[in-house]
Every structure is written in C-alpha cells, then in structure tokens.
Length: 376
Ligand SMILES: Cc1ncc(COP(=O)(O)O)c(C=O)c1O
Image 1 (cartoon, helix red, strand yellow):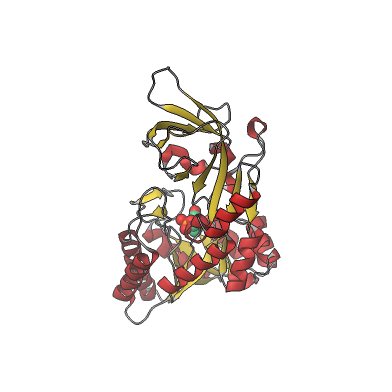
Image 2 (cartoon, helix red, strand yellow; image 1 turned 135 degrees about the horizontal axis):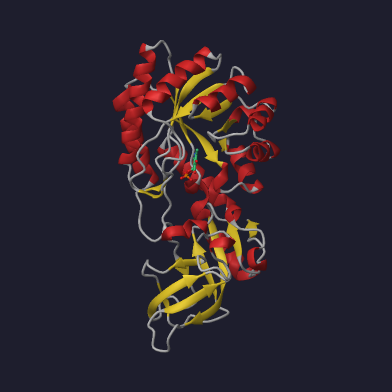
C-alpha cells in the first residue's frame, strides 16, 4: 500500500466497501514498464480499470490504449486519447461497433477468424489489422484458455486474405494469460510469431508489428519475477528471432499498470464457526465475489489481507462475501490464516486490488451497492 493510500484510509476513513487507487502509482508503473521495455509501445488494456483519472493520466504520459468495446473506445476519447492511439483489440466485435469506431478515427483492429476479417473489410476499409494467435498459457494464474486466437496456419491464410481484401496486414498478437509468472511463456510465443513473419514474407507480405499482449504480473500472496526480468527475456527473444530487423513492438499491460495502485477497504461483518470447537473460523466481509472479486473464482487470484491485529496469533479461516449465494466464498482451500483477534466491525484491507475489480461488481445483487471508488 502506498503512503498516500495509507493516509487517505486513516484520515478519511471512507465508507466500506471501497477501492482507493493511487494514480501516481499508476504513473510509476507505466514508467517502470517503459524502462523495462524501452522499444515497446504501451497500449494500456482499459478493461483492467477504465476509471477516467487513470485514462487521463496515461494520456498525459503518452500511452496508447487497447479497447475491448466501443464503450471503452469512447472512454479513451473522452479523456483526450487520439483515435490513432487506440487499438480495438477484442477479436469479437459487433459490426456496428467496428463502424462506429472507424467513424471515430480508429484504424487498428484485432481479429482471429475469417468472419471477423470480413466485417473489418466491410466496415473498417484500409485499416491496420493484426491476427491473434493461440499460444500456451502455462504459468498464468488467470489463463485465457482457447477463447481467443487461432492456430498459426490459419493466421497465415487470414493475413494473406486481409491483404487481398484491401486491409493493411500489420502484425500478429498473442496473450500468454493474465498474471503470467513465467518469462518463458513470452519467449515461446515470440518464436511462433517470428515463424509467421518468415512464412508470410515468403508469401509476399512484410508484417511490421508484434503485439506481445498483457500478462505481466503483480505480487499478490507470492513473489513474482520483476518487470525487468520480463523485459530482458522478451527483448532477448525478439533479438534472437528477428536479429536487427526488429518489428514495431506493442505491449498491452492491464494488471501490471493498475493492480498494486489499488487497495480495497472492507468491513468484517461476522466471524463465526460451524461447530463450537471448529478450528476454522468463517470470516464474512462486506465485499465478495459479486462485489467485484470475480478473480477469486477457483481461488485463482489470492489477495493479501491487512488487518488491525496483524502480528498477533493467527488461525485458519474461510473467507466469504456477504451475499446469500454459496459461490460467494472467496477462499476455502488456499490455507488462509487471519488474526484470532479479528472481530465484527474491524476494517480490513485487500492489497493490490486496482485491476479487474470495480468493473466486475454486480448491480445491487442481494441489494448491495456496487463498490465505491476513490482516485487520489
Ligand atoms: C487482448 C488483451 N490484451 C491485454 C489484456 C491485459 O492483460 P493483463 O491484465 O494480464 O496485462 C487482456 C486481458 O484480458 C486482453 O484480453
């Protein structure tokens, strides 16, 4: 937690549950990423946290943006982003959204299938297009599975078709899965991209861009490699495969830019046991899976907790949200331990919750209002 967030929580004590984000920390993270990969152009993945103060600060820093929807395109434009700094990166788009983004000046689009390519040819003529390929997600704590991307052979054919349709076959993208903990995942994916560059060159198409996606991790309960380690591995692989003919390099970080800038402040609603001598206490918070902690699904993302009793004796706990839905149980199997002194009414903090929380919050499920947000 940054000093600024600590002081805000102490002095203002905002009503819980709420997320407090230090926008200066967002700027620092952007700078750290740029320093680790000086040759890469950063397209912030807006979906991680689309709050206006974040987009606004990133516009000032010269960031570009990866938008998942027309609405995200509009959010970026509203904060002063130039349309040419926006990539419409979702490979599944309504044609009306493509048309509207094109009319707003967006000229870079992702695709991973022929029907999507045909939509782009019709509704975004002449645009730069890049094909997303499937790559391994091993090592990712929040994998993206097979939902997006296509096999390399198909990507090769589609890029040729893109040229024939009058589009600009710009490059190739991939995503190694979010909260990726292995630098090797990028190295393997870059090798696949390089193969495609060679194959397409033989077919008369000179690709110009490699989009390395997001995935750069944040420290939750366990240590992760530093961003410099990812930068070194990525640049090493790029030079190994492309030599001194490096293409334009794009990265689409989301979690890394905003994750550790945010702290979620919550209240303990109940501490109880299922039997009098049960060693495991159930700790119910005023925030849960439906309040925005969707990434606790499968106990995938394991947030760190801070309590007023840290340092005292601890015992095992199951941690749950406030709604009457049994899936609103955050951690049951991940061996969480919290102080024995923890009691109803205590305020606790969930650290590094700046990414993928606010926009996941449900609209009044069980009557609970969506998470409040403070950008400081
Ligand atoms: C196309 C695309 N780019 C970038 C990201 C951001 O990933 P991360 O937050 O892991 O950096 C995502 C996340 O789902 C994505 O789908």
